[in-house]
Length: 176
Image 1 (spheres, one colour):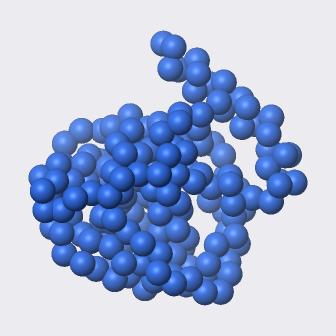
Image 2: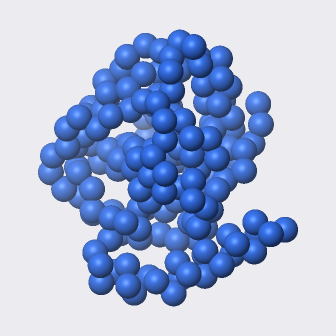
């Protein structure tokens, strides 16, 4: 297992739709990727990570919510699809690809997601609250969308100088 490098805002891989993982032919590769993604969020204090955030253009993501009161959550999403969303919630989100940026984002309150696990078995996840938010955030990444795109135009305009700084930092890091 290894900790993967996280792609930062400005990297074009974050705005490209990922390709489906072709199970079972890619199962060994997906299993290793899943282990590496979990190790990467563990090392970086994240909740979720999509493969393209690590530079891999496969429709794979993981979510890890540590236990606080009750059981924690550990999900593997291979080729996930949001099949239903209802209600609305607004809450703070951060992203490992946007260092230090936390924004209030509007999302569905409840979702149903169909996916496969790392063994290629189909799963259906019904979630609400924070888990629903995390699922939507990671599926957006796999669709080539970043969370700032969920903001209103006015909010994005206000954020423009900060996003420009983040892109500049990415360009500088890329040259090193």
